Length: 281
Image (cartoon, rainbow, N blue to C red):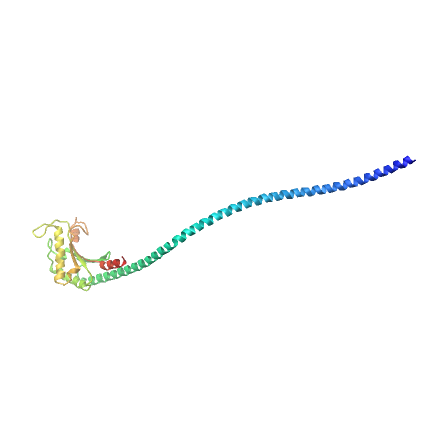
């Protein structure tokens, strides 16, 4: 009987212990699972942080490279700025001189333009006066025009001279008198008297060739303008051009007639422009 109680007590004790151990094991298992889940979560977060750390490292490297490049550019700009600072004074002085020269040149050009405009106005007025004075003369015998700032009065050979002669005709005296009247009204004007011939050779006791004939015709007109019409000889130049500046072909009689002429060239007043150039220089 006593043995039975002992056995019964042992059974109850073992059962109690077994119940307690199973409950604890279950609790520990649940705790383990919880810890394991937390550990796994922690591992994932650590991995995430590692990835973020790697990305941050890459971005830092890129930013550092950008900073290095910017520093190089800043250094280069500083060097350029130092160089520019060294030459800025010289450049500024050079620019100022250039601007001053441009201003002077502009004023000089305007003055030249005014002079040219004045010369053109004088030339046009001179042409009108000459045409008015010679209005009764046949247009074929006298031609007046402006070319390259010079006024040209071309008088035909048949009006001035006999063929092969440099003696001025009576009719030509009237024409030259009218031209002289206009020229005397402009005493500041200088002019050139040119003799021109055709290409027919000439040689006699008084004339050696066409050069000689063209020169003697020019000087004959000059003497009349000086001696009879009192034009200051300092204003006059005489020249022979022979046959070499023709107006038409010498193959026809009409062409030869056009080429035989005396031309009075009223020259541009170059002295005024030379004075301007002297002032500029």
